[in-house]
Each structure stands twice: as structure tokens, then as C-alpha cells.
Length: 471
Image (cartoon, rainbow, N blue to C red; front, side):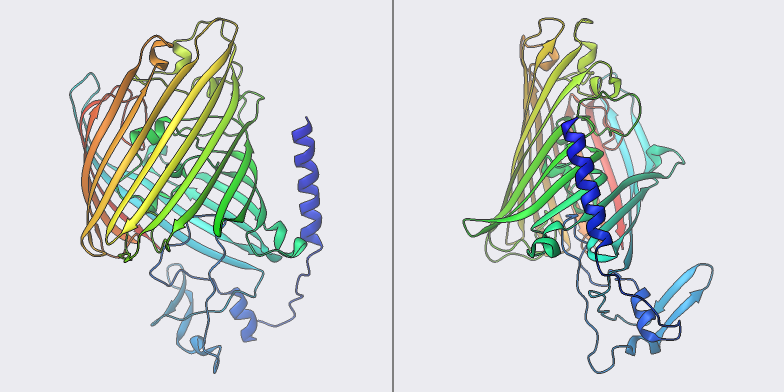
């Protein structure tokens, strides 16, 4: 109750802050060029991907000082089978001073999957639209108040288009406290809650076609949540951090919403990361910039929740090593509640076309209520390497992912599952247009993920080929 009261008061205070902002009164007519400029979108005209971090400051674009409306002479706006804004060349538009902005982005991944099963699971040979996203983002009333809406129409959702993300982001520290943008902010809505690097990354930034087996097993996905975030200086390094309270701990790629199948226990999580050496450059993983000096990034996170039987979505979501069946299927019927605690640590580096990432996970499940069950401990990792044999174009890939623990035997003995993968990626326009092919050997799977094309207990060879495009 106290947490809800604090959240309610904070939301009221934020609303009051927004209403107190000075909103410019627009009196221009449609013929005035300044209004036309204000209505223009901050389009992604550079070759760089949009920032993956939802807290990254908006990009600033600049136009000619001699004639700020030169672009109007060679641009066309109208309807031609759809709404069109067209130009025969690139223009930089200085939209940074306008509080009302809208940006539209989109991206998709078309994948062909072949799975040759060595176990009871069936073979697979399919084309699938794994991700089909359209994104609306921008600011309103003030540049410190931002919004983000992402729709998804992937084939695993049938013919439905779903609201994948929706959140509002207010930079509290900028105008209220006179701090640098991004120093302290408030976020609320539906989004990826902070915990591990693999989930924080956008699917556009993957070197392989998708996440690893272990990162899904120890996953904490999207939820309805509220966060505070910021950036701090420590030992002459910038540390980005975020702390969140959300509906519940649902792992394995599943998501929590507002359905009646959730319990009443909030979950909490947090994450911090920092670049220890060098400048990270473009791309979250791949070394597109061919770093002459070593660049190193580190991070870590935690997640904690009490889970009880009245929330069937949460109670049945955690899976065990190595069969991948839900933990709830093994627990005595008398067990009414347990506690799940997760931790992750990660490190990435780039140097002369090489890139590497290691993320390690730990999970403890204990404090069982209703029946005596031993404390359960699982751990695992994914280790990934990439190297550009042709700079910015052709990249060789390798990955090892492993999960080990005693959850599948309720504490009696350890079991394990792993994947070993290799592949190559061809980048036509960095992460805007690329083709990835990877081959994965599975020795058991403790997950059931339609996104990864991996079912619980899978053993065999998985071949995935994927084309990606984004704008």
C-alpha cells in the first residue's frame, strides 16, 4: 500500500510539473514556413541506428544558416497512394528547439528456420516474420517529456498487431533541479524492465539471429512498471542506472500485463552499466568502427519477487534444468509461494574488428511456503565472439551458451543444457540492412521459445537464415 501511495503522489506531482511548463502559443497560419518546419519529423536520415537506450538524448540536426528553409524548394508533401514526404537529397533539420515532435521508425526480420531433431521434438522447416515493428516516438509540451509507442505484427502472434511497448518518460532533473539532461528521470508504462544485457539490447543490434538459450532461461521481460533512472559520475566514469517496480517476475520470454492471472506481489529490479575504457562508437555489439584502442563496457543487474499460486501466469513461468518444464509441475501441491532472486553481470569489448560479450547469470529459488523444499540454485552464461573479415561488411560469429543447476531435481543433483553456435553476418548498411546465417547445436533446452524456434528438451541442429531491414 505504501508503494502504491508513493507512486500515486509521484504521478500527481509529475502531471503538475508538465502543466506548469511554458507551452508556446502557435498563431502562425499554414502558409508560414516556421509552422511547416515545426511539423516536420526528425527523420533518421543518417546511417546510424536510432539509440537503443530509451534514455538517450534526442539527436540534434542543423540546417543552412544562410537559408533555413532551403529544403522546402526541393521537397514534396502530398498523397500518392499514401502520405508522402519526398526529397531528392538529404537535409539536416534543426528540430531540437521544438517541444512537439513525432518520429516514425520501422524494422523487421524475415527468418527461415530448419531444425533437424535428434530427440522427441518434431523437425521444423518454415519461413517466419519474427519481428515486424513500427515505432512512434517524440516529445510533447516540453523536450523533457517524451513518449514511445511500439507496435508488433510478428507471425508468432497470428494476424494480430499488438501493442508491444508504451511508456512516458519525464526528465525530472533538467528543468526542475537544473541538472544535465538524463541525470534523473521518471518512466512509466509497459516496457522491458531493467535486468540483463541480452534483454536490454534491441533485436536490431544482435550479431546472431537472436538471443541465446541461457539469456532466455534467466530472462525478465516486459511488464507494466514504473522506474527512476539517471546517470552519475563515479571515478571519472559515467554510470547509467535504473531501478524499477513492476507487476511480476515472468521469465522465459513471456510477458506480464494486467490480466487476472497475476498475483498481488510486485517485483523489483535494477541495472547499472558503464563504459570503462575508450569510446563505444556505433553498434551495441559489433565493432563497425574498427577501434584502434580497446573499448570496454561492463554492467550488472538484479531482480527479486515473491510468487504465489494465485498468480498462475507467474507461478508457472519459471522453468527448470534440463527438461525445461515449469517448476510448478514439480513442486508439491501444498506449496503456495516461493521467492525468486536473480543476478546478472556482463562485460563487452571491441578492438580492431573483434567484438566479444560475456554475460553470467545466477538464480536462487527459496523460501517455499506450505511444504519443505530445498533451496534451488541455477547458473549459466553466454559467451560470444565476432570478427569482421571484411571491415563493416562480413563478420564471422561464434557463441557458447550453457545452463546448469539443481532446479530440475528439486535440489538433489545438478543437470545441464547447452548450445554451441557459429555463423556469419553480411551488413549492407550496418544494422539497417543485413543478412545473418547461423548454425546451432542443441544439447537439451530448458526453455520453450517460439522466438528462438527452440522447444523444451530440444536436441539437434538448428539452422536459421534471416534478413533484416530498418529505417
